[in-house]
Length: 280
Image (cartoon, rainbow, N blue to C red; front, side, top):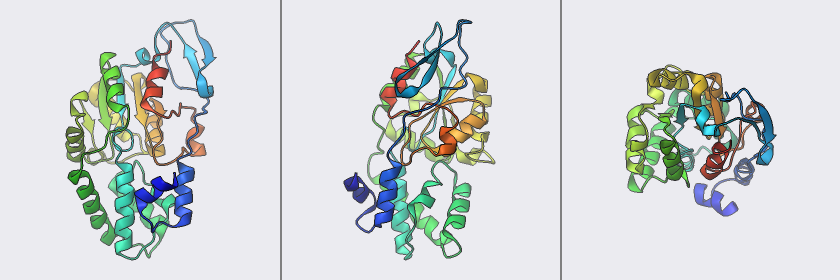
């Protein structure tokens, strides 16, 4: 784990930041349930799956309870959040500013407007956001264009599972729409999705539910019939606020106590999510 932190942020990362990131990657898998699910049968029995996840059993697989599956992009399908973090630290150090990791992690899943608010409030008046932001963006752009965009382990296999299940699919991301399209095309995933809603297409980004509500409206699928996959707390809160069921696969940080209290499944991989959704 320590080797991963150094590879991500270089030798100059402080010990406190190393410890924070290491701690953030110790994920919890224990949850209180998977809500809200609408079973197809009037016969309802509740049973515990592994990791204490409570399932309402019925005469159908869990996946069959939904008409659409909506995906976040960065940190969930694409392993790009670590690249963004590294680019941010590099940009800050060009301006002799040493950032705190825990403040940065609050931005994960948000759009540029919300990110600016979090960073300027968190780091204080001495933080030169307007100078750092364009350098950060350029560092990130170079990193994702010079090398292939990394796809998360099991993502393609899971997308094939969803496709073979006959579900509608969409992307709900804080990334700008055209940028999201470009990244998905380069990653070889664009053909899996019929719809992409980007952060520049809504007035309020995650954790506000507007992004997910817009996807629901454009798909013509009611929120209660949508399943969301997210990595970040901000994304989970957005999906939950939209009235959708959500499964979380954490990336850079462990879910907060507030988010854990929502009672959604917190799983470790796409493989585990697929296994869960095949349960009857």
